[in-house]
Amino acid sequence: MPSVEVDDDTDRYLAFAAEIAGLTKGQVVAKLVMDARSRVMSPTADRGDREEPRAVRVFADYAGHRTYASFIPGPGRLEITSGPLNGRVFKTPSQAAREIVGHYNPEVSPHRNGWSFFLIEETGAPLQTLRHR
View (cartoon, rainbow, N blue to C red):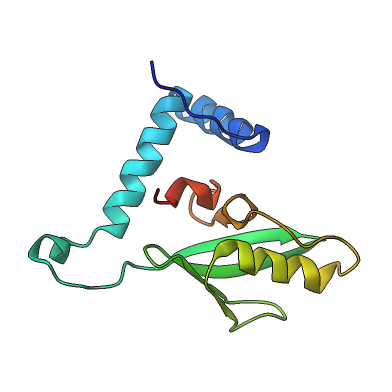
């Protein structure tokens, strides 16, 4: 049987979601992927149109501050939509996460994995669930 490695926080998110939905962790992952895929794929994609996927609202909590952003699947671009970094656009979620950490806590290493740093506003799942490999 195939398996997927996740960090401890993601495993807790999955366990919580599985418990409240009456599903297994695997079923939760499958549902999240199918839901994300249906939101990202537009009906015109089959015709070969080059429309950019719709933005996904995400947020990050760090040092007592919540920062909202819009993530654009495909290119992976992330635009901060609240707080002191409002309007800044980053090429990757990790780049945005480093800027947030650096802004609020410049004394620590800003290196962060943006895919786990940001959560999807609609589901509370890590942004990692939308990552294309």
